[in-house]
Length: 120
Length: 107
Image 1 (spheres, rainbow over the protein chains, first blue to last red):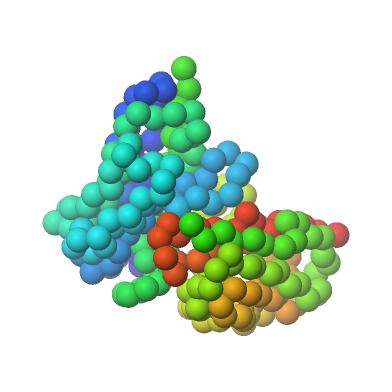
Image 2 (cartoon, chains in turn brown, blue):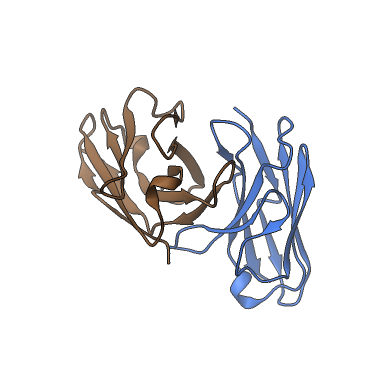
């Protein structure tokens, strides 16, 4: 069974930093592209970043480019999101998600999410 | 970025109704379209990908159609557990983008 467990969320002041982690199990982590998707309170879904299986390809939403860094450690079955220069508008639940399958497929398996609150 | 526009933003329906939600892309995305269901406080659940392929374990009352710019999600016979918010998403190009969501409420 695919399991994704996010951690690292919390309350941080504007301009601060936070590192989210996602522990994966139940599948061969090194074979799949991974994603971060967020949802501000009461709002819709927003794709944040994606990373290919070997980290060769990385993509970011314009809203986080230059501030957030996605990475993965295939030996540890873990995905990360380093978030710097945080703003109030980054407040959201952050979901880790695995692509549904190999190749061009959407996020098909999601974690339960971790809440990030940016406030003074 | 490709803009995804869903309609309606919300709808009221009764158990047993046939429900249709549409999603329009601002440019052609072939069949790189997914549909998700989300219930309050829960992670999204993938229902359909490649515009019309049902994710494993999803009931057959859900179906998807379309290609290019216009897509449809249909629930053939609404069940109580289907009251939720539905999102479309294009994964044709980065940045991936979602529609604004359609909330399906009980009439």
